[in-house]
Length: 524
Image (cartoon, rainbow, N blue to C red; front, side, top):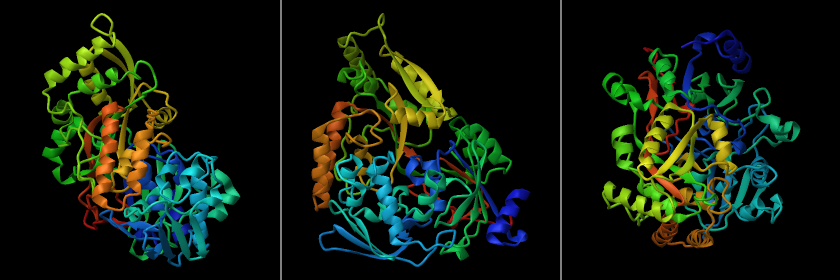
């Protein structure tokens, strides 16, 4: 553990804490984050940071279960469509009170199409949110209002039993309207940033470190044990492991898969591999020829040996994926699968070759595509294996491994042939995965557009019976599976290394680990 003089001075100035009591947590956090503004992030690494800085109406406990946050209680109308939240009396980090008006301001900003928040669809459950996002209604039409400073009324398009989980997400956080209105987008820079969470940002040196200081105005500051949290970008997981081994890092995500056997043998107490609600898949640009040919998309799916990838290459205990919705998702009684799953791989490969020949490709005329992923050893290794598999079906792919932020922008702007993506659930419901394929979803990278699919999701959202709703959602998933709009790869496990002296870490299905719940063993 090390506390540089600049951080010590900053913490003394902000928190007036005695230097002997300072504790520092260094967290290896994967790729560099894009922003501290919750409306311009979309990665799990960014969500970890944002959850230290801001608190929504609800927040999560150490096991990622929803608990009261900015709101202490709430009431739900008999039809399930109006929720009234009662806010606790608490402050922004600059001493100004947090009010219901800050939530109204933040949610309207999120939905305003001029903001350009790709994740706005996450709150389309709120009345009129969708029509605001597509410019049909003004942001003031959003179904959220402040009855008074400490009472927020939220009207929904349809009942949503999962709303408490959804409101723990970044998109539902409040914003300090007095600061955003004064600073514009610069409000989220260290020095300007004002939050209501357990920490405030002190210093951000891009591609080096982001330092957070304990926020003594946080409503539960007395129970926050870590004074300084440093998030360090570790896009190279091998380098991250080396830093972890010499205790420069107290936690590290992700792990280098080439070292999984060594880790199991030598550092088993630090290795946290647990199932959670995540999916890795390859998005297909379905409108770009020849990928607009369903025969090509089916062949790409058939020629991928998922069992070899998960069982022999990655070896994390992850199940191969033949669907879009993970098996552990709640209230999803039917489990659609790609229709070729029962076939042994040689038969799948033979079908893939036949489809390729029907589409005009073969050994003398292979299909050439580009597979884009981000520049991290695990991803590059998996991409090379996939490249080799597809060659057997006369599909030759060039691999482009680039910075994670650039990769994300290429995906959002539809500038790719095939792109490796991972999605981790924001809340435990099948719609959190299926909504990615709505025609106007900001994360519908391949631009899939099936009105029947969208209409089925809409109808399911109006169904009050949980079982019938789940069956309707499954019918929508079958449509997308038959259209082969994705190439599902694997359902995810967590990839965390945690030093034994870091206490309070609870493995959970959402892989959320807020720094406020952690502490360091004095005998480390």
